[in-house]
Every structure is written in structure tokens, then in C-alpha cells.
Length: 164
Image (cartoon, rainbow, N blue to C red; front, side, top):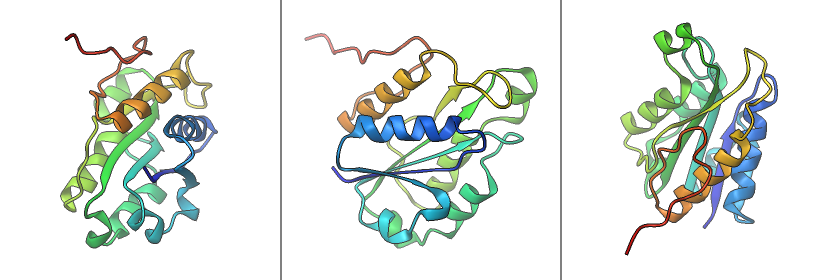
């Protein structure tokens, strides 16, 4: 499967998650910073995962602009997923997170989001990532590729097999 992971990063945490997702998806995955992303890459991919740090409850301007500028025809016959990096505090819960907003923007344009948006936690504004988040990102990516449920929470690092 040809996959594309597009990300923006302020302090390197979102970049680490994006690279882990790309590695988990395998050799058919390309990981690019949003400033280097091209519509042609989206159009030629089967799966597109877009990630951003949460900034004031939203994705970065670069990610928002990229998604807003995607032509509708580039979204056809693609599977999309969104992730963000975030920290736990009351203000973040009030204002929201980037991943659901990215997902909504893709859906509003007619894109097919095939995974629950996922947030990966950092300690404070600048990080670092909380322990286990890279493993959780890899599990999330493998779940998306396999078509399994993707509502993993911190501590859920292994994909559970269905009972026969």
C-alpha cells in the first residue's frame, strides 16, 4: 500500500510521531513535512495521514492551509486519518484538539476518513513525548493499515485479536 504521512511540527514531537507512523506502515510509506507536501503525492497515495501539533485548540496554519487547498479530486478513492500532539490540561480540553478539526476538514471536502482521529501526549508545551507514545503511534498506524479499530488510548500498545 502506498501511504503518505504529512506533518507539521513545532518542537519535534509531532515529527517523531509522524516518522514512527511511517516506519510502522513500511517501505511503501513516505513521510514529508507539510511545506514539502505536494498534491501529486496525495493523488498517488492510497492512505494519507495528516498530523499537527495542537495550537490553541487547532492545527497549525500550514496544515490548515494545505488541507483547505487540496483539490476535491485529490481526495477520491483515498483513505485519510488525522493525528495531533497535545498535552493534558483543562484549557486544552476546553478549546479542543487539532486531529478532529483536520478530520472534519477532510470530510467536509468529501474525503473518506477511515480511522478515529488520534492524539499523542507530550509533557507541557514543548514536550518531550510521554513514555509509550511512539509505540502507541506505531500500533495505531498498523491498525489503520489492517482495517482494525483505531480508538487506542495511552497504555493500549498491542492490537487485540478478535475472538473466534
